[in-house]
Image (tube, rainbow, N blue to C red; front, top):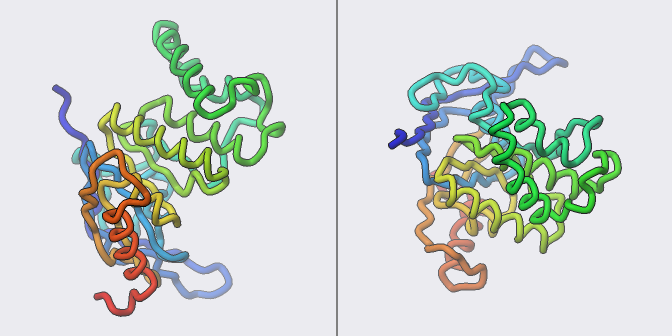
Length: 258
């Protein structure tokens, strides 16, 4: 049996120099949390609380000013395919078609591995509503379609840590709910770690086994809530609405919390 993956953030601080002055902006202050295989961590909070900064740090795109971030005991020192990230805006290869973008990783692998991707490629294209656009290029897609492609392109690689930085915001409501269910299926099938930044409290509660509520200036963790609602979840249940009220109160009346 493969050992479980463990992601650890220990006393992480992040500051950015401001180009117009000699001042420094403290984006994150003393961030501490651990996530293990089988957990889906939703991160919510107001603008400026450092949610996206946390994701970029875990992805290895930037580095902490102080503290450590470790995956399976090893300090993260740069990007790696085992930590797949989907950004707020789609990052696609403009010279490749939809299908070529989706299969890019597979085409970098050996021939035997490529064959295993074939059925998954078809399933994901159908699920994202992109099958009939497989030969189109990114500039021919709508914003929502491009974001769907970026999402399934990361899904297909089944990374150990799946990082989602507000990836569903550009989608219509029905597609968004379908993609939420697909994310749940992917996570439940792989059993790996998923972290998702979202401004949608319902989305955070519908998906997450934990909800990290953050406060701004500097970004810090206000609460780390274990969401014990069973799956599948109903957005209209009394239990769900109770959780929603709890998180809303933390965000709207944050000055009452320490």
